[in-house]
Image (cartoon, rainbow, N blue to C red; front, top):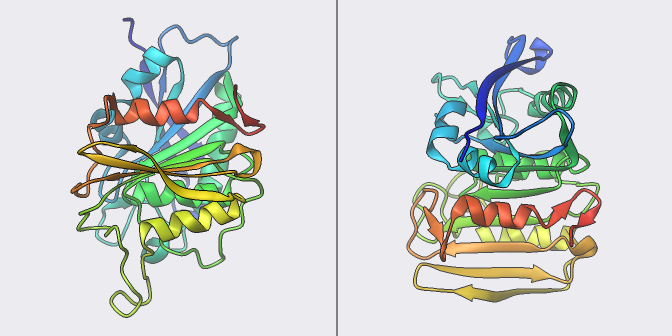
Length: 278
């Protein structure tokens, strides 16, 4: 199979919202056989705390899958924290007065200008702090992001609350034995002032936002994972969750018989900003 190409991109941002930085960077993988005349869907992949955009491309299979399934994979780069570890801000203790919404909007504007993308089919996924960032864009950019798939995310409550302007389809993946972002959360008395909700409590809140009337119900189960779903949601914006039984703080190689990235893409391709895709 012919391979696509990956290139580094730069977008200008106001220094006041980026710790004095004038530019932000991201990698773009254009799929094999991409042309400037046929719009392609986009998957944004957020790295974890201490990671990089190049690591995210190398350690996930999204660029290879992009060549097979014909979508664009985009890997944004976070800014350094006080220990010089790249991270995604605007989330809990990672705030740092950085407005990631500005970066995301500017990046999406530039992608739209530079490439032929399907603006109805832009999706976001990420691991750990990048999973938290996926939840953040679901709240903040619901009119631009069609669906999200966070993995082992740190879902800190947002200070301004979460008020999406449309139902957001979501697929969440989390290890039941995650020692970094515990499946059952961290209460406020243990981690003040930044408690972490239990994963299913956080998903239940999303099910309420989406107006889901049924669930959670188990729809899939094997020795390694259990699949839960909330259905009866407005605009068919269902909530799916795979609990990786005994799973640690990592991206599982596979769920059932499919790679994790294939499971995520199979979920994404059912949804657009306008609603479900038949």
